Length: 191
Image 1 (cartoon, helix red, strand yellow):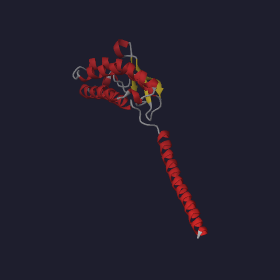
Image 2 (image 1 turned 135 degrees about the vertical axis):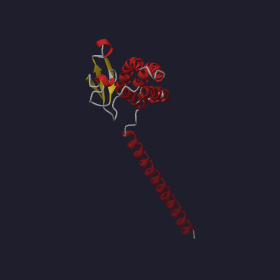
Image 3 (image 1 turned 90 degrees about the horizontal axis):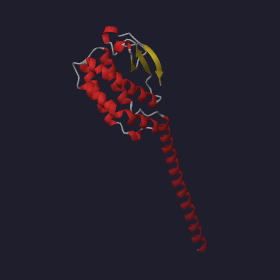
Image 4 (image 1 turned 180 degrees about the vertical axis):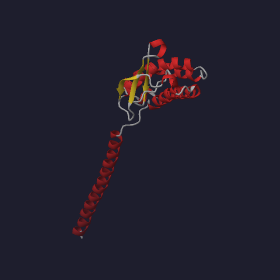
């Protein structure tokens, strides 16, 4: 009888150990899957927190290219809202510094452009100042899915010139619009 009880006790301990080991194995397998999922997510480049700002800027640029002051005003408002949605804590330290340096100016330019439908000359003046801010932001943002170009028009502002960011290699001048849409050259490829 003692041998029988001892055998049951040993079998119970053995089965408990095996069951516990099985649970640990299952937990380890689950952790491996979770780690694998996190690694896959970390390997995928998340969309830039500043992408909405650059997208709104490009909409503004395209509206000015077509001499469309109403669409430019709408894009100016969209730009202002995009800046307000960025959380600097979601950016790298370098990006956060650049963003904090330009955010108020970008919002102000967006507001001026939005409130000046009917005065495309004034919109273009703000666009010129805005373009340098966006250039700095695009440079700090680094690699993105979208190739950008830093373009230059030598004729704008009494031949003082003006720069802008574009999403295409084809020159479409936002400063001179339909009057001289192809005036300009690419100064730099970004990303």
